[in-house]
Length: 358
Image (cartoon, rainbow, N blue to C red; front, side, top):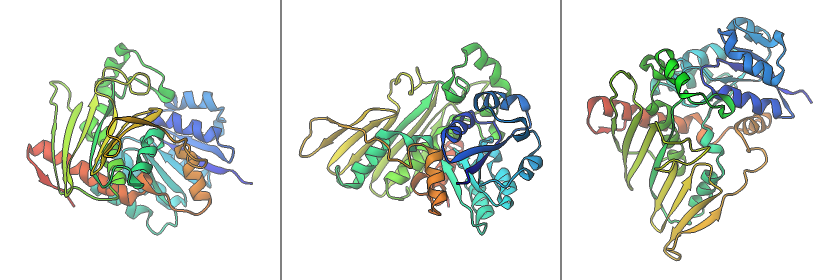
């Protein structure tokens, strides 16, 4: 069987290393090439996965000419997602974009238009989709365990985007401070800031949990730290027909949730007509209350099913079977979430409540 050929485009986002590891460990996929204009940023991946030099490129066109490729993993700065997708679309390959979707709904629509008519899929990856507790919460909500879902509350973030590399390798606080002045994560023009980094998680998975429903209006506020041009803390309140939901993002948590859960705890809380569910990030269980059993009780998290144990396994499984990606990876659902993010950005800038932008 011919292996699924995957090319990695841009190492701006540290998740590229994690995704390439999933490709490397997949029996039916291979790293067919990697591209970044800065050769040094690719070296750790070259060393970790034994990527031959003839598959390492600092020139985009040369990389694409080395194809054919089945899928590109895009890990560029958020503001460059649309440009790169438009460059990739003519190359007859699927485009897998590491979160967030885009810097704006206008850019998201550009990406969707670029892929329309190619016969290939645009895929948006949100790593929290592969957290067992959150998948279990979705099953329980769909089964009606807490009645009709009325509210989704999300608090998430980490110590900051520069505190870790691929595979969650930690960076010293001193190195973090040295990188901040030049890092794209801290530049507005590049799509930096905690709101664009994390609010899309809550908005996208929240839209998934809510069955695709969109809020009527959004109210958002952000911190304004002297000397930092992007937000590091954002709180958005979304008014749905069913009630109010809160989406909060934070760079500067006391600890990272994948090592030690900070306080407040990172994750989701769901309020239904007949119960509630708490689903912390990376938890072994969810905690449920219902009218029949109001005492909080734990339900073990379901193991992820074969074919969707991680993002690359899911993408290869769906694409090899000519099946569309679904849920939080579907760009149509992600566009609704991007509109929530756009409205939050405008609300924070104008300091007022806004109807959901189109």
